Image 1 (cartoon, rainbow, N blue to C red):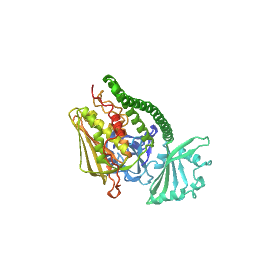
Image 2: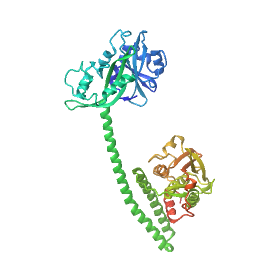
Image 3: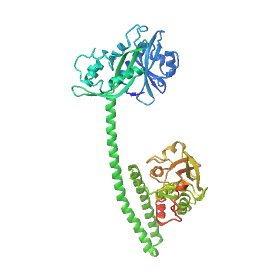
Image 4: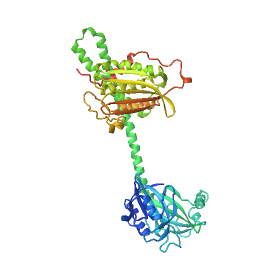
Length: 511
């Protein structure tokens, strides 16, 4: 099936327009051919309509270009060729019903004459096996002249006379195979250039027509799709322009965030120097202000880091340093590093694992970013006095042994109609956001991106008012490939402590 752009001119064609399996419109030529009007078939299932016309269930998608006998409303019988095409939206199709030349059944004009009178479709009738042009309407003749620069009268010419390369180019073999196989061939977006330089695009269908069990004619018909192609090319050009604009935006965003990160790093270092050098001289009030400066600097650092990592990941320049790591020990270390933040909010974090050790190949820094984000969200949205559970187990996913790290909170949960939004860029779920739960809406988008970089998968299960469970899945390293010196992280280091402080900097703990 092919797509086409159904224009107002198609209203007069022999067609049924179907949307979502129901007849939406019929062409005027269809009524003339069958006697059925729009009122007879409007909004009826196409299968029911076809059964009325053909007296049996008919699926043109599985019987493409099918030859059948059609019964008109006045009980006359005609032989037809039926094609199904996609048009416009993905759920729309058009059924073109073309009457075949049959001198026994037809008492009116032949099929070709009916088609040739439709000025929106180019039609040419050829003999077989000689491929001599017997009839052609004006639109078809214009196509031949523009495509092959033929100036003389076309009627009566053979294809090899109209197309000098007919034999050498393989066109003759194509036409012979169409007759031999008795199946139509569709050629898309053929380009012609007129003598005045006008460019047009066509979809071409070449269909064999049998009579008395043998192929006697071949019909070639054309659809002018110039408007559709030009619109698509215009959109493609605009898409490329937009793509370039987005790339420039990402470059500018990366440059700006780099410029922001430098002074914030200086501020943070200065605060640390003041706390170290003048530790015994600072009053409680000064310490309070320094802590506020530090926390808000960390919040800006978190935003800058997220923007930088998002931009790097989208640009394909994110650096990954893979190493074998024990995800059980690494997760335990990360939980230890955030325990102080959970305790400040009156939240308990429990950790358990089915295995003592589980080796994955990952970038440790990236894994830290992923888990710290999930844990900070869990702390952020879990009320005081409740528990966050982290559980690790092994499972089979997509026929592979994988480790699952679950972060389960007993917080406010996610509304069912918003669960699909949480991993979208710059989308925040409306969870009664306030000063207690600030964010930009790029954290979980970044998490999903980072998980993908580690060949993992993330899933969420949540119920509003009950809590949420985020599950991370990573492929396990095969036992024979586990290095003896897998990365070990026994206790939080200064770098992890800083990363944790930055990740939890947007959580409000009160006065």
